[in-house]
Length: 471
Ligand SMILES: [Zn+2]
Image (cartoon, rainbow, N blue to C red; front, side, top):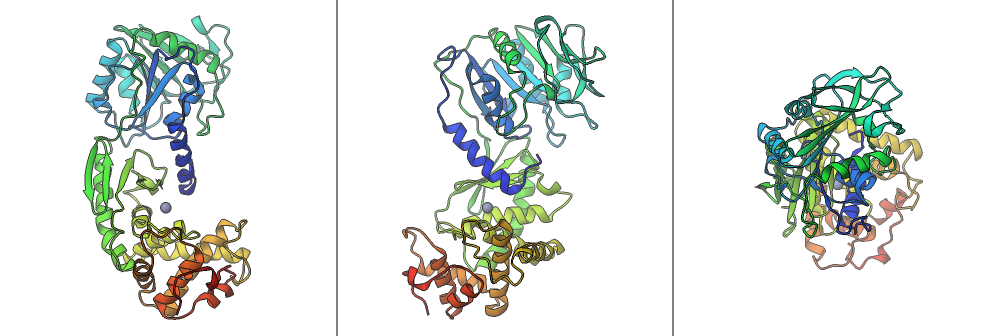
């Protein structure tokens, strides 16, 4: 996914909000279509609820599968939504057989994708039903056939399909080559479509072709009755491993990546302890979920997630070292996150860990961010990073500058002194933790009143606004 790491965190909060909200009233209430979108082979925010909002919200009860596909309970589901997936995680033979049997027994499976070189793993799923993706680009316009005759078909591009004799072509490109097809298989149905026939935006704002996609899915799902009183529930990644303060969560497909992330965690943990001078905060029970994506990571309080091949791991190691140390670093900071520094301090912990492990990218990351801040505030004395309209570059660059300067002026181990002092002075039960509080703690940690120094860097901090002792 071409989503920045920061963006992915913000979007995930939205994802949780959507997942937790009530579904709108359905046409059949309770609905007779039970859909499961698989996000275990490849995670996207789109498949995590947005497909439902675009095509199924009025007709189906839907959920997502985060766990091993071959173990997914499909007994009370009649619509399975799959994507072609990422070559890093093949569909296992057991998963393909599980899908085949689901369809044979009456279920409907929609597989969306494009051919590519290398061919995506969904090719093995399509092949079981005697169909294949190709690498030949489809040419617009797209026209409907049979039940889609006369339908307007929007197409965002993709490749044509190679369909076996038992398939019915539902849409073709300008040259008459299929981009959408369907067939009966056992008691159920398979639909195979080029990816560009369906929406893709994480905010669900592009429900293209909904006027025919929805009925196409609903009519086929009717071949398998479900018990509408038993709504489908999300299926979690089912494998677990305890690592330090964290529980690693993954499934069979992400297991190799979980092992690799675990290795990174084991490597960075002693450095986090040394940099902060303390162990992770007690009682901070956290899970680290391995997501089948290269799109980044997020932290949502109790759960942190790591994109399995973030930064092209394992070919590139530094981005993963920085990300794992960052996400784990939150466990050292909580329960009292610094208001301005929640993310910068976690990333700085990641960068400092990378520096200790000898990655040249670490120093370069710091220098680049401070240079960005200086473009807006050349001597870093004018712009208050706590201001409501403070630019991201000022917040991050100035934060890094402060951490580096505190180490230079009050080190070695200034950050460890800060963390140790914070643990000592700030009670767990304390309500809130302001930047005034943080500067007071820094002052005690280094044995000097740092309020004037922070103020000289345009931080709006004031000793009279904190009840913590200052030297
Ligand atoms: Zn974070």
